[in-house]
Structure formats: structure tokens, C-alpha cells
Amino acid sequence: MMQVLDLAQGGKNISKLEAIKKAIQTMSPEGTMSAADKAVVNQAKQGLNLVDVLENQYSKVQQEGLTAGSPGLGILGGVRGSAAALSQTSPNAAAYENTKQAFLSKLARASGEKGVLTDQDIKRIEKTIPSFYDTPDTAAAKLAIVRQIIGDAITAKTQSSQGGYELPITE
Image 1 (cartoon, rainbow, N blue to C red):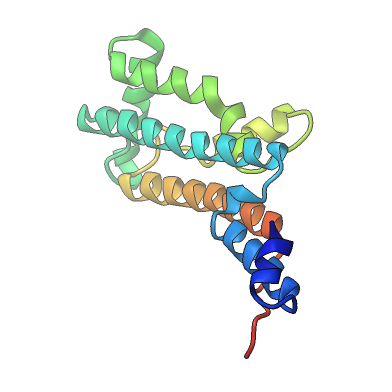
Image 2: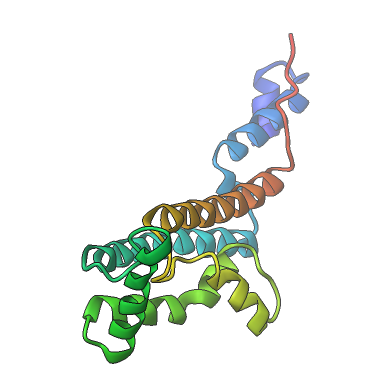
């Protein structure tokens, strides 16, 4: 195909046409990604969706007053939240805690963890997800950081698949 287009241009522009082809492919990062890289990006995107689900559920728990309302004595809300989740007196608190625990490994993978996940890997990611003892500001900051880490993992994978290729056409 490139040779036909080159002939249409007088037979002297194959390198420019190849550069245009590459540029068009890199406009859509997934156009040049391997199947494995696409899977990693999709996994990370699913991680972002999971963060949204957790945030929504955590918001419901906050509305019930089962999280720390403020620093200091406000942390007693966290005690109530933990007790409500454990005793299942709050379906929202129980669902939040169970969902969080069930999907920590998916969040670890979405953030770029590779290989066998250890208990330490899971504990590390768990610290980045709001607990009942976090104030609203702390919870929001944690979720923003998780989103940034996963977003950076997506960006890194899509940029590495593009190879940093720039269109070298000059007149």
C-alpha cells in the first residue's frame, strides 16, 4: 500500500509516508500496542472503575456517620463503622469493607504490580484505600492518589507502546 502511495507521489516519499502511517497509528495508542499491553491498560481502566465503586460506597457509609468526621474524637465514627461492618448492622458498611477486601489484588494489579502478589503488596495497597477511621479529607486524598497512580500506569504503558515516536516531516 505504501509503495502505491509513493508512486502516486512520484516515487520519492516512502519515508514520509511511513512516518505518516506511524503517526496515525500513534494517535490511537491502542493501534500500536501488543495484546499484552492492551490487557494491562484494560486492567488499569477496570481498576479506575473499581475506585469509583469504592468511593460511591464509602460515601454512603460517610452519610450514615460511620467514618471519622474529624481528627481527634471524630475517629469514634470509625469505631462505629468497623463495628457496623463486622456485625452487619449497616449493609453499606459491610458491603464497603467486603468489596474493598475482595478487590485489593485487582487494585494492586491496576497500579502496576507484577508477578505474585504477596501479603505485603496487598497491605500496601490497602493503606491507600479509605478506612472507616479516615476523615473525609483524608479519604478524598487517598482516592485521588490511587487514581493518579493508576492513571500514570496507563500513561506509561501507552507511551511506551508508542516509543516516543515523533513525526519527522519537514519541508
